[in-house]
Length: 398
Image (cartoon, rainbow, N blue to C red; front, side):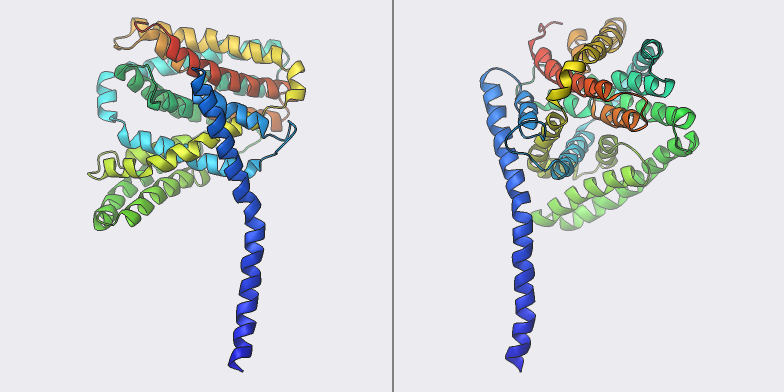
C-alpha cells in the first residue's frame, strides 16, 4: 500500500518536472544564444575600435523576427533587459553624490528645462506643419528633447571612457533632471490631449508619493542589511530584491518610468553605511542584464520599412542636433560649470528609452504613421551609435 502511494506521488512529480524542463529549455537556450552572440559582436566591435554597444545593437537586428535565421523571444529578452536597466540605474543612484551635484552643478536646474523647452517649442510646430496631430507632435518633440539614461550611464561607466569626472557628473545630473521634467511634461500632455482621464495632479502626486515610499524604505533596508552583512548570499539577495521591488513598485503603482524609479531606489540608500557593499554586490548582474537592453533596441527595427522611413529618421536626427546638442553645448559654455562643452553636448545626443514609450503611445493612438514610428526607432538606434562613438573621438579639450 505504501509503495502504491509512493508511486502515485512520485510519478506526477516526475512528469511535472520533465514537462517544466521541456518547456523552459528553449527559453534558456534563447538567452544563452543571444548573450553569446552579443558577446561575440561586442568583442568584434571593440576590436574595430568601436564601442561594444554597436555590437549589441547589431545582434538585436540579427535575432529579430524581421531578419532571416534565429529569432529570439523578444518578450523574454525585454523582461531581462528591464532588470538590467533597473540594476544599472540603481547602482548609479547609490554612487551619485546628490549633495555635491546640487551644490556644484546648480546651473543644471535651469539649463535642462530650458533645453527641453526649446525642443518642445520649436519641434512641435514643425511636426504640425507636416500634418501630425497636436497630440502626436507634442509626443514626438518631447521624445527628441529627452536623452537615454541607460546610454549616458554606459558612457560614464565604460572602461574605455574618455570623459572627465566633472563632465560625467554633469551628464548624470542632466539625465536625472531630464527624466523628472520629462515625466511631468508627459503627464501634462496626456491629461490635456490623450484619451486618459487621469489628472495632472494625480501624475505629479504619484512621483511625490513614490519619493515618500523610497524614503521610508531607505530607513528599513540598512537595518536589514546590517543584520545579514556577514552572510554574503543574503546580503546580495536583499540588495538586488530591494532595487527590483522598489523600482517596479514605482512603475506599477505610481506610473513612473522604470529607469527613473530604479535611480530613485539607488538614491534612497545613497547615504547608508552599506551602500558601497550593495553597489559592488550587484555589479555582475548589472553588466550581464544591461547588455540585453541594447539587444532589444536592435530587435525593434524592421528593415522592410526603412526605405519609407529614412527621411523622417534624418529629420528627427537633424532636430535632435539643432534642439538638443547645440543648445547643450551653448549652455555649457555660458554657465559656471567646469565641463567639456562638446563632450556634454554629444553625451546627451541620443533619443532615449522613455522615447520608446512616448512613440509607442503615439502610434497606438494613431497620431503618427507606422513609417514615422519606424523612423523614430531608426533615429534611436543611429543616435545611440553616433553618441557612443563621437563622445570618445571628441577633442580632449572640447
